Amino acid sequence: HGHLNKFDYSLSDRVGSGVELIVDGDVESLATMANKQEIRHGHLNKFGSARASLEDEIDRVNDERSEQASKEDLEKYKSTFLRIDQDGSGDLDSFELLNFLNSVGMKDGGSAWTEPKIKNKVISKFGTNGKMRYDGFLNMVLGNEMGRVLRLKLKFENLAKEASQPKSSADFR
Figure 1: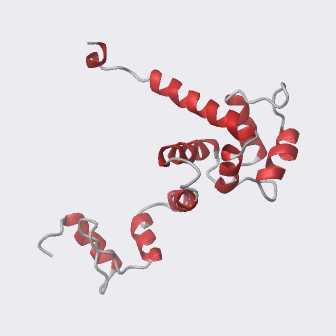
Figure 2: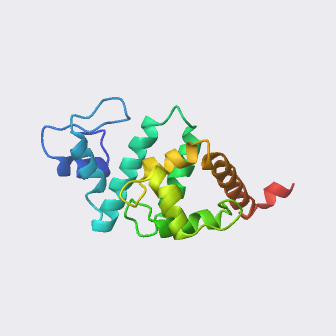
């Protein structure tokens, strides 16, 4: 184990005997996916662990959808979803979607969204049981109806955020 650092030893101790860790990313670990997640999420509290599991679920969906959007765009959709999901449940409810759609200026036929409209027109189409998971959110964002406008609004929202970041003196030379 001369090539392992202190962090590697502590992980090795937590995983247990018979399991080798990946060194420099060259060798596949013998640990099961559950063990890998336990290693990655074992130090988190209940909320942090739930959030990490949600992020794992979103990453799996993004991997499955990698042909539908660029990796960069999928990461932006992930961070947007996590920001909208105010209670951290992994489900967007009508109130969370209402806040999001109105905050990005999305209109429903020229008027602001309401919770009943969200339930009838958005969640009923892209969600299940009155809620929307990340997969449904991606269906909405990548779809042809609301998706085109949402993608543009999200792109402009990100551009505005980048433009508002402080500039270094080197940027003005």
